[in-house]
Length: 131
Image (cartoon, rainbow, N blue to C red; front, side):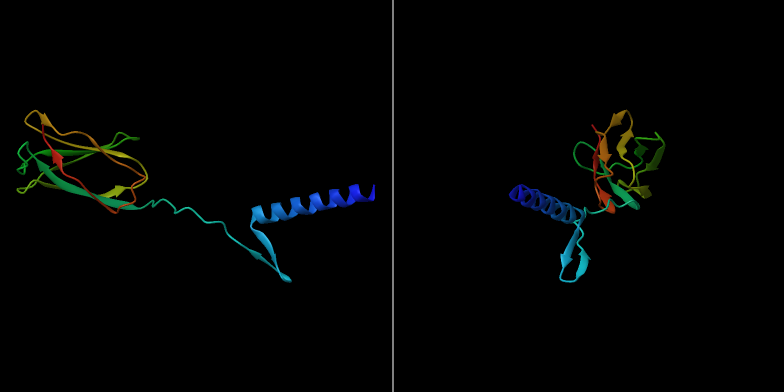
């Protein structure tokens, strides 16, 4: 019976030690210390810039194309007209949600690209090719 009590106590102490380790509290001499588990990098909830160029089939810049940036959740659309060198630029794009990005001009449209909330770059640069 005494041996059974000793085994039960050992199992109990092992369980308590495991629970303390899992909770991050470990005995360090006479002081307790909190050991934090490796933390995941927090997703950046700020803003980014989305920019690039609109190009035609032969990779020449397209002037006056309309570039659309649509929030996938709210469906709100922002637009920008490409400059003389084909460039477009959207400032203050939220990093919280995903966005669809595409360009159109004279019945031609680019493929839709996704600006993902999982992408942590502050500057999202991509070219849009009209087909």
